[in-house]
Amino acid sequence: MKNAGIIAKFLIRAVIVGLAAGFVIVWWKPSLLGVPAADAPKSAQPAGALAPRGVAAPAPTVVVDSFADAVARAAPAVVNVYTARVVTEQTQASPLAQLFGDYWPSYRRRVERSLGSGVIVDANGTIVTNQHVIAGADSIRVQLADGRVAEAKVVGQDTDTDLAVLRLSIGKLPVMPLGRSDTLRVGDIVLAIGNPYGLSQTVTQGIVSATGRGQLGLATFENFIQTDAAINPGNSGGALIDVRGELIGINTAVLNRAYGGPEGIGFAIPVNLVRGVVQQILEHGRVIRGWLGLAPQDLSNEQASALGIASGGGVTVVNILVKSPAYEAGVRPGDLITNLNGAPITSAQELVSRVATLKPGTVVKLAGRHGTQTFRYKFPIIERPTRKFQPQQ
Image (cartoon, rainbow, N blue to C red; front, side, top):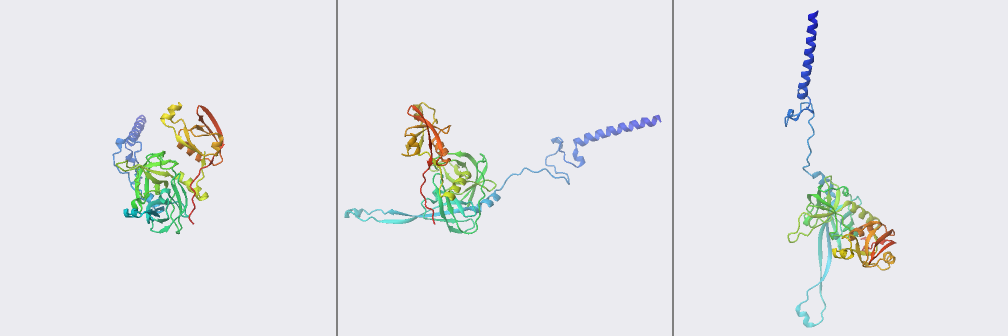
């Protein structure tokens, strides 16, 4: 019996030791059990090793190598815009005509053509393009990506943002999905779709180089998306889309490339601004904005130094509408405006843009200096004047 007890103890110890050894081996080489070694040291997992049969391999890192799906979603709603206008000009008089004194001048008429792009934004045939694309046009012809061609009518124009709204009636139309421009980040991939040099629909790719670009002298209200996606003559009014194929901007302009100028610097109007302009044009035929009734101008460094203020510490009034609420409140040319509704003013662009977001009739508080004396005025703003436009019937 004594020997039997000794043997039992020996067997128990052997089993315990064997289990411990097995646990260590399996921990170090879990592949022996047919499962991936998730917690094993990297040295225990040879590079490029295949997953065991019956076990799903880890998901690979996905790299986008094509934007074909985004283009297929957006491109059908990008149209080519062809405009024509009749120009009348006086012909060059013959030197012999001067020998006969007064003579009846002769004129000739010619057709001036231009091209651009546009984007269909709803099923009713509403097209957004640049105002400079259709400015002064006597006829506007639109060609769809599927080859259909039709005349388009002008619904409204907004020179302050360089946007225009057209209407196309040609049956069922593709519609561009609208995205958001307020979530864009520098470095996001973007695609420009348009009609460069009349080559028909063309796609270029780049990134968002900057957002909120202003004071470029391209429009009254500027908040451009800067991109290095190629934008060429004919791209104006075309679409800037993201990798999902959603509209994020309307391509508008590039910096002057003459005489070896910069390359890869283009600008697009953000879609959030486009939405508001289109909605107001469709509802009112124009964009209704607030206006102080005066023309502000940025202070030069010399003016700021003479006034004893820091550069960017206000704007000067260079002109004012007589009998406007601002004039009747006491504002005069030469005044320095430093504050609007309790917030400082640093540039003329900022002042104009902030007032434009307010409805006409809104009472504002304006603060500044008249010579050496400070002033605080309160008065209602008026509607910003726009060029009268009669929609085509």
